[in-house]
Length: 262
View 1: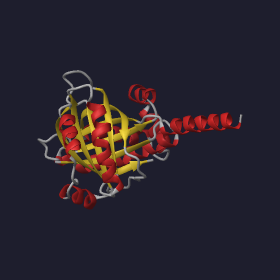
View 2: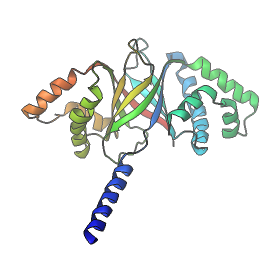
View 3: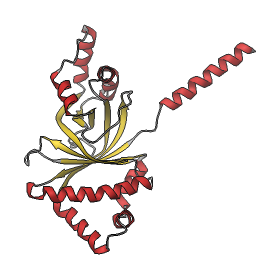
View 4: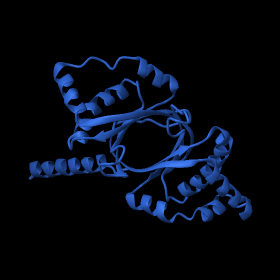
């Protein structure tokens, strides 16, 4: 009887640990902004205004957080110069926010001392200061184990991938993730994760996934880019070659964290 009790206790503890390890997936809204040189200062003022609104949304627990990233390369012919990221606890919350967010109500709550005329003026400036070139709905499907804490000045690399084989996600998790985990453990990067695009979707969509790596600052990113990724044994090299066949690497962007709300 004692052996049976011990066995049952071990099984229950194992199930409990596995349940804790399987955390709720994070949902993210990426919005890419194109900003002309002459509107740079206006755009900055606009995002500072919006950061107050997003802080109110965090306080109301309708979002988990919001970030503003400046992007490189940032030439006017090279795409977007900035990206905002809004974090949601679930798909429902993300879809509801996009379709029915009462911006003015949040603005009044975040800035009770401002008149409605002042708030409307900031909304008008928002429209004039930038073009929202792309909006992408994403779901986090894998990440390294780490304690990375993002701070202003943190850097991120965004590798935009186009899946060409159904085994792509498996390849990222089983072949590439262990290498990223090793880099994290050696403090050569802060964290790594894989995001799956929910929308846009289909054969005409530019990308299907984003693999990202975060670094505490530009110095750590530069050291990683200039350093060696370490040696691989023959089996790992062969696995990597096969893994690379599962996707097309579309492009890489580098981002610097400029503002955040948590």
